[in-house]
Image (cartoon, rainbow, N blue to C red; front, side, top):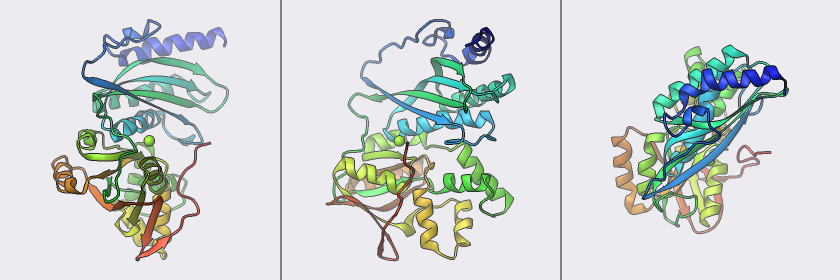
Length: 329
Ligand SMILES: [Mg+2]
């Protein structure tokens, strides 16, 4: 690394990132480490996701939305485990397109989301790369001791639910690549969802109290339900007609000549950042009450059964998928 890059790195940390640091634990980003006091009665829950230009975000995406997406995809993982976030570690691999204004924009995005989600920067690293930009973030959260929800734990008979709506991430990517036509307002809503998804972070306590198993929907609904089914040692049956759509998603869906193929696309597209989960049948009413109280949409998709894998039905007939979701390289 050249002297110029090193100067850029120190300036980036001192002027842009240090103001985001936790006032005590981050040590102003001038030390080699962050130091967290242990929290008695709680487990520390950690997750990490990396995103790469051209793979997880588009070269034309503004960097403030890239930063927000990076943080949010990690908060989505914590929420799906019932954990509440408080901080994060960050690694930035800036590409040539990331000059000072772009770095400022990145930090503006982080600042806005730190405020929205109550989290602080704790530390990290910043480097430059001759390749595409990439960013990696480790999110930290707390959950009461022994209460972190896992993918395992679903029992045959448990109803299967999902929060929010499915398909907007995939539709947003299509919108940004001019592959679908809709009115500009709806295209904009879909593009926003792709660039800055809104994971149901406030739903974490409900997941913790009521879910028997849970995970976030990032690879695709069918693929992720498959992960939950495998970890729990159960099968999952869902009806594709029940898959919840947003207003923009529904507008796109109404124009399809083949509704089954359209739903198949939406449930395998990924980038949803909603929570899929099971509850015990006796807790279904409590779940609906809690969801309503918190203004979180929940939809019952089907149920867990004895067996293995995901069976999706359309018009009562089982559908088989060639591809269930996004596979990581
Ligand atoms: Mg996940």
